[in-house]
Image (cartoon, rainbow, N blue to C red; front, side):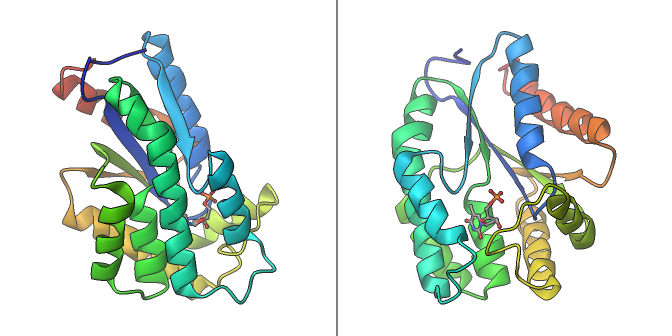
Length: 216
Ligand code: TMP
């Protein structure tokens, strides 16, 4: 279960709607398990009793009056709860943690998408996360139309998905900007490829990074 006795290894999966992050996180977790390395899988917003209630408020399609600032604060609140309850304790025990979305989603959606000041987002993030950052981020990139179409196929519609193409285009651009500015942490995976190829590409990056750090 443990990769080492101290630091753990923290991986975030990011991307616009419909990139298959949830399927990818389960696949990566299975690959690690096959090597005898269990990991904690989490997703945002939610994954705690309080976080799931916040998720409901955030994603309810009827909550059209929600202000961008309320949205930003609620995503941060859900993240703070998840970190304290699950992620930080697991990392402290030396575990691998894979999270489906983390701080980059807030920068991309609330920063680039909604237009909230990036410095304000960064300072709130440092309060909510107490500066806990992923060791590695896999950014699954696909064009907006393909992503939204995939989600509609599985009937996944929430308040943010209902935003127009212009919003999602800004979000995708935001993710790519994050990757461009932090090439050490963020690796882009082409999620337009067939599922098996995306999985293999994600595993290749993850396993290579873990080998570099002596964790595999
Ligand atoms: P999900 O569909 O991956 O479960 O994510 C829920 C929605 O919340 C998705 O539309 C992305 C959005 N989101 C933000 O806008 N900001 C955030 O910080 C996070 C974590 C998610």
